[in-house]
Image (cartoon, rainbow, N blue to C red; front, side):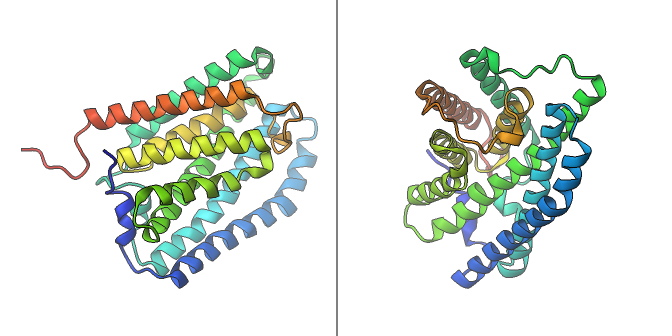
Length: 284
């Protein structure tokens, strides 16, 4: 049975379309402002300075830049939630009494392991040659991607599986239309990466939304999202051409693998829910 305690937080604070549109405007405006600064001021300096740096180091810096942009967007969202909706930001993240760090770590490790293993199995030749990197460069790349993707992925979860999902729920009598709208908007935000990536994003979005509803919070979904982006960026993808759609058509085996991973993650969340004490329950 799906928990509604988390999505039910949409009743907290003050609401209305003017407040919602104002909050979205603050979020988008802050994100765009951050993107302008990063792209026009920071990126040219970085591109010149790191022109001869190894690709993993450049990708690490790009991950940090993406994290900075999303941090600006979240800052705008927080201002809107606190000032316009007059509600706690924590209600966008969890329905538990505290942030469940263990769920985040478990999601990160499980996702990184599944995605890393299956991606390598599908394309062993796609693994980045990291063995030749100096230890300092390898350490920088690891930390930069972990920090950058932690901010970026967590921000996307708060936006799409937190704020958007809860706001959309107010407009529908049932939960699932809100789930569909949240997933659709998440997919549209990833259309620039190609059709295959958009389909994978839709599968990913539905999976993580179900996980959020099962567990009553974003913690496990945040970890899964961070682990996915981190392991792909660290081991397999050059982030400087990440926006380039694949010219080889849709790889249905990769999409089938994505769907299988999604089912495993949902199963893991269902097992965690079964084993854990329900959120808000009181022990005798």
